[in-house]
Amino acid sequence: MKKNGTPILDFILDNYKNFNARATRDATIAYWRHIEKGGKMFWAVAGAMSSAQLGITLAPAIRAGLIHGLSVTGANLEESLFRLVAHDHYKDFPDYRYFTKQHDTKILEDRMRRVTDTSIPEDEAFRAVEKIIVPMWTRATQRGERRFWHEYFYELIQKVGPKLRQGDPAQCWLLAAAKAKLPIVVPGAEDSTFGNIFASHVKLGECSASIVKSGMEYMGAFYDEYKALAKGAGVGFFQIGGGIAGDFPICVVPSIKYDLQEKAKPWAYFCQISDSTTSYGSYSGATPNEKITWDKLTEDTPMFVIESDATIVAPLILNALLECKANPGIANRKFAALNR
Image 1 (cartoon, rainbow, N blue to C red):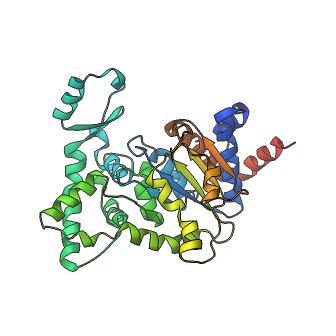
Image 2: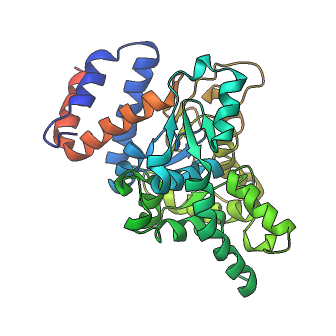
Image 3: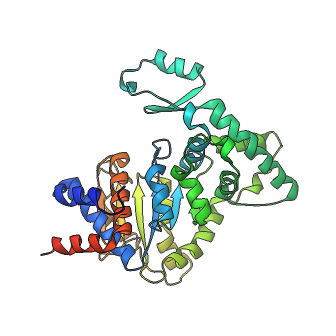
């Protein structure tokens, strides 16, 4: 990215005029204006974004102060780590659409785990990390310690030295988040490879299930984290995909209001990138207006829905925002010119 220019921002402003393109443009502008006012932004990341290497732009955005908290699936959490330790052993399959069952059986036999057009190496990722994290769990069991799921990974990712790295640490969002000490929630961590591995060690009596704090405790801690993030200009919500990664944290506002019976600022911004079209009973395809009825958003909240592929849209938005951060005067003049 050129620090003395805004080529990606210019491309968006010049070309993104209507439909999902316009939503992308408007969401980017509103995001920047919220940050300019001193607001914070909380990201909810579902899907397989870490395997898709979203860290290439997510990590710099964290370091630049454009992201202030995260809700991620257990899979995205661990896959950011996998990309760092086993990057050179990943294998891509650009022709995956034409695979037969026999092709995928061969991938299994090669000890790879396919995620769309790429694959995670069993031995260099899962088993290599297992050698580091299982002793952490056993020590915690012996000492009677209790931590949140992400805290084990925050400690682990910072222990991965140059000899264990194959990927670029500058592109590892988990490392950037750990160094920044960002608040993270990992709802449903059981639904992940290392959630399964942990469960097996609990079943075998080698680890205590109690060393990992529960989802209820995550929400309990998130009440306070949300209040801290929402001070001043408030905190926005930027969501990729649907499901528990998004639904768990966005519920914090009505829970504070109705369950704790305390005052809570509403979310100050909302954007969702999803390829799930609006349909009956589909959370991922629900319009933001529906969230007004649950008191998660208000009629005054800037709301954007981008029905597209997050692996295409999110890097564009993040790079445009990084350009804004590097060239705020230029960006603000361009945005002002749009209203003339």
